[in-house]
Length: 420
Image (cartoon, rainbow, N blue to C red; front, side, top):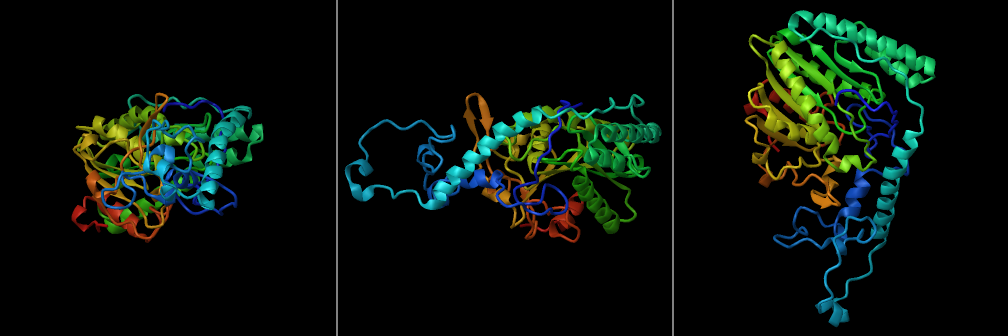
């Protein structure tokens, strides 16, 4: 998304206590995020919502029979009052919901309340003053990259001064860091929650380019974590293939949803982001001409929904691989439904809470809720690779199995990628 709304959002980290990509942050007790919703939306007894109840071929419970039925607006209408064995014979009556189901109901109520209250509260916060984006050479070329980097650093420095004068120490520090002489900002916009596209490496000379697409709760305020992930990947690439010109592009080019919000459950933000991601890929192809680089999209969490929505539009733009990590689903029924010629990869760490998110997709009052099938399931059809024991924010941890495999994908060493 070009620009932003101008309203500041301060959000907590992911419900696993990691706060998104990058290093972990301390968990605060009493928090509730997508994992709460996942537990609540599961069927009776915690049955998975992948189309069965965990036993071969057994249909899942009706939505009206789940612990959250009648309380969230997500439940299906009650079935007709036809005779049923459980009505006629008390022996077939279902037992009262165990305490954990009551906890799930309470947790979901808290989540939905937060999803309504937090945006309303954020709207009352004063807007952080920020300059409009810098005017860049048009079109951007390899010869004008240095000029663009300098203009965006100067813009970040001005944004830092304005945020400091406004009394926002945190945003001022984030902007000031991005204004450092060593940073290469392809695009920068400090308005609202902020957007930035940063390059690590020599983009003009690169023959292999990785584009990182982040998920929820990634803003200028939390950008340091995203930069840490991009830096870890770049170091791995240069370590594994020191004589291959590579670059990593950290793309915070859309307004990411908050983890505790209704927007994180729907494809709306992803749909808004898709054309801007495509424009970035087109721009990268131009910047790396006359021999365009091979481009890999590495997409995390909600960012996988963005990449999936963009995939069908990338034909002919040099995207060779799309890797989905920590995905809640893509909105597509299968890999084939993404209509991409790129190799499609998927992985999930053994400790990733996203595994508990129900893989459903339903129409709720004209809005699509959920993202459908699990990309790491065999029937989806992606190339599933090993991600080790890590959690939702550990895919780019130095020394991890997942980072090693992501680097191999970017470098085109596809036969060396370890499978799950």
